[in-house]
Image (cartoon, rainbow, N blue to C red; front, top):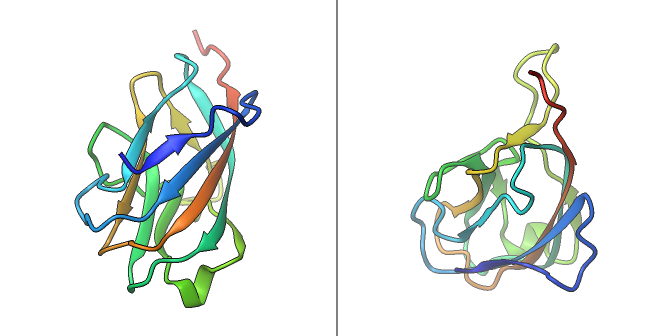
Length: 139
């Protein structure tokens, strides 16, 4: 696995996930993180902070879904090459589908945040900061 939760960072409502580039271009080939709270979470914001970008041209997809799935509801086709992202931070939610929808992702207890590169992402060193709230019960 090439993504990992930073256990030393404060985790109350904000998760810091370290991302390290890999050669794999498979769905969720960069890694995945299971919901840490065991209840449905509403992802309210996502921020990508890059130390270095990938050495090759590749796009990054991040989203919530089943283990091993390519998902794009947090970041979709984001250029992660060094010339574009090195030493920068970016706000990362995908675009709203409709004006009435909130641009967030629901992270249920059995789902993962999946990280997929379109090609090799070797050289990438980044963090994804995920802000979330526990979803209210709708029962």
